[in-house]
Length: 327
Image (cartoon, rainbow, N blue to C red; front, side, top):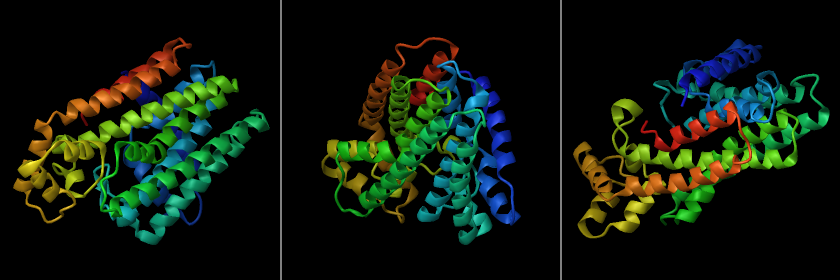
């Protein structure tokens, strides 16, 4: 994958984003811009722009939607961190830890409302029906994300271990919906046919599921020096992710006891946690999870089979990166 291409796109998106996030009182806008200034690969805005370009559109057409998607993404990060009481994001203090919970909530709300302001104003030359379609797609994605977050919370509270199907349904809403919207909005920005919007949306949806599956794998077996999270962090927090579900269903006896003892146990020792992670790693879970991610990757590739050009190649390179990444 060309990180140079993503980096160039990110600079343009960042410039557009930060120029949109100003007003009074300044403290709210500082808080809203805080995580944006400190990191993020800008994968979702990149997908908006490349989905527009694959259909003959331009960066200028896609930029408002690209910025709006990133605003919504950061809104979800800020509010998720408050709900989970997380203290670190992108290697720095989370927004609510730096600015306080009330300002953190307002910062997220500002990002949410600014996203819709950005696309509803957009390019003045853009037809009104196109702008309406953009607003509609983003609104639906936001609803899905909220529903997905609620499902995640319900799963966390439940004593039951969810099925793989329940897990996939949850991440399709919580994570994948915004990837699908990114690609759909890129296609809509190119003022194209409904069939193209459907194809690009399908690509984004399947990429989003693959992204979350691999992300959850990294949360278990990832190198803590790279991920900046403790070894087995998701296991200790009791996160009901696909690798953990597969491990619990596959293992038995003493090994199962060791994994279940670590699951959701904030008081577990480092040695016991590492032992549980070692057992999961020895079971071939990584192979099974990556195989599942490849299935979604292949479905995503199929959605782009009728297109050609450099933008298609860049989207496919991003897809390969998502499936193969280890951090």
